[in-house]
Length: 116
Image 1 (cartoon, one colour):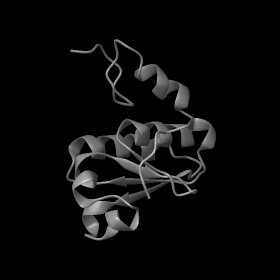
Image 2 (cartoon, rainbow, N blue to C red):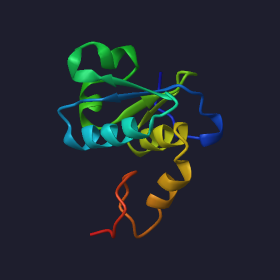
Image 3 (cartoon, rainbow, N blue to C red):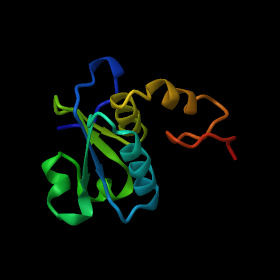
């Protein structure tokens, strides 16, 4: 499986969010996503719990430790901001996430604030 650019019109739920709990930024984002996952459209896999977990999802161990990854039900794998976009879309927050990506805002899904 290769990483692709996220197209919100093609997303198939559920979306599996792959994260390393040793990465504070990923953990913070996962906590936010879990709090908004009321319909169970997201499934969370904590990668540091199993050494082989990342490979099962087509993600290398080093890449999994550096940034968040997501895989939708069709098998498409997304990394970084595309993974965040996919997760936010699955739980109905695509427009909010898109606003956060506008020029002048931080480039993370939940980080609303001026760029430094």
